[in-house]
Structure formats: structure tokens, C-alpha cells
Image 1 (tube, rainbow, N blue to C red):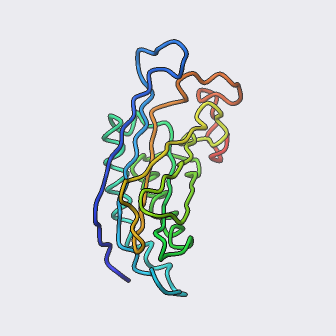
Image 2: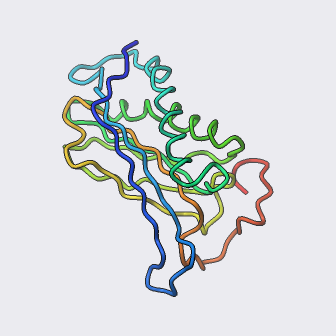
Length: 193
């Protein structure tokens, strides 16, 4: 398979103290690690692309480790998500190549994450934005952690590139109050509840 050719990387960290309600003493922290790589399949249909996922695994581990560090360590991470923007000379399936290496990298770095990593992808022009969904790392039905982070880099992805992203968060939405399963009531058997 092809080597992973990185053009640029970015790290975005948000600290949210309030959303119109009372300011909190400790902010919700959301962070995104973004990497722009050459798309080795751009410009032509290639039937056999699955092997490139193995090439992306070290990148996933590197990005997930960087994110956990940005949040203050793995014990601070409560939410996660992933996504990809495919440049115009590619196809949506090229973004799907990030599902396995991105998701498993976060689960490996975090050690005990049980929930499926939510994901999104699209084909977009340079500067396109993507709303990356976030859920609790151990139980997808924890409603307080249903969130998203908008990501993008101003000149990416170019037509023959992929913008790959991982997102982590430190907790629930800053003023979460719509009920449902609470994080302290997680059973932790199936990644759902």
C-alpha cells in the first residue's frame, strides 16, 4: 500500500465556561486533532483500497495520544468522535478508510473505552467545515454527552487530499439538563448503556 504523506497537522482546543447559563469554575474542554494527507486513490476508481487502513493506524495512534495529552491525560477524556473530509478528486469511500484506524486508535489510547466511536464524513472543497459527533466513551446512550465539534482547516483538503480528524471531550455539555442515562449509572457491558 501507499505511504501516508502528511502535508500539515493542526490541534484545536476549546474551553467552554458557559452557554448562556451560570459560568462554571471548570470548563468543558473539546479538542480536535486534524491531519491533512495525500489521497493515494484520488482521480480514479480503485477497487482495492482496504489495505490503506493498516497504513493509517500509526497516524491514528499519534493523533489520539496527542488529543488525550491536550485534555490532561486519558483519565480526563469522557467523549469522542471522528470524521474525514475528502477532497473533490476523491470519493466518500476514501473517507470511510478512517473508520477503523481512527476509532480503534482512540479506544487503544484510552484503554477501556467501550462505546462505538461516532463518525461523519463528506466530500468538500478547501476550507470545508465538518461537524464531528461526540458521545460518551463507554456508553453511547449517555444523553448529556451528545455533542459535536465543528472542525476545518482554511486550505484543506485540496482536491487530492484527505483531512482526517479525531475529537475528544472532557465531559458533558456545559449545561446538560435533558435527562436520560447519567454517566454515573453506566453499566458498561455493551457500549450502549
